[in-house]
Amino acid sequence: MSAKAAKKHQTMAERADIHELYELSVQNVEHEAEFLQATFQDIRGRKAYSLREDFCGTASAACEWVKQGEEFQAIGVDIDPTVLEWGRENRVGRLPSADQARIRLIESDVLDVETSPVDILIAFNFSYWIFDTREKMLKYFRAAYDAVKEDGLFFVDMFGGCEAQEETKEKTKHDDFTYIWHQAEFHPVTHYMRTHIHFKFPDGSKIKKAFTYEWRLWTAPEIRELLLEAGFKNPTVYWEGDDEDGEGNGEFTPEDKGEADLAWIAYIVAEK
Image (tube, rainbow, N blue to C red; front, side, top):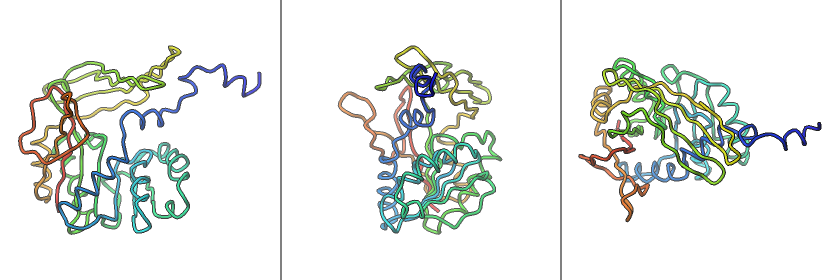
């Protein structure tokens, strides 16, 4: 059987790329870039030009950042060489050469890496929750403090609500696949959680445990207090607004109370 014929007989799961599926399921880098720039300008009164993306994975956010113009620079840091190589080939490599020259990808532990100070440092998709003790998280936040300019900002995201502490599965249908977020294990005493991402396809094929995470479920007060301890100022929660149906509208604004939703996602923005 030819290679072409063999590929034709593969299941949808066998033909799929988990990194593409991940981005389609959980990322919206165009919206993120707009939010980062608008928030920075609101707080600092100027444009941000340099970005560092910690736990960057495929570096899609870094790639989106440099699309803003020739003055914009981005650094992506991740400890996994495999996903960085995928990003170089499938994200950075597809940019115009001038944009490619303004992105630097570094294989390193975010606790150890040294880079030039940036306007904005981001740690998104909750990956920084891998630091599961106050000591470890404080060490990372102090490293983040050193990594931004004197008027720089540090952005992190987080999720919560009572549903975040359940052992459950949530399915989201897309055009060609179903994304399944699986909270497989949660320990109330330590807030340890183990989660998986699965994908299911219309032909019945599946990718089980495409990604697995072991995190601590941190709370907003804990994160804000640790940011202050690390030296940051004004760690502000940006809460998502509602559309006419009561669903999240993708617009995040400062909020000092929040709402007792069953599940929520928010950003925290800290100033140096």
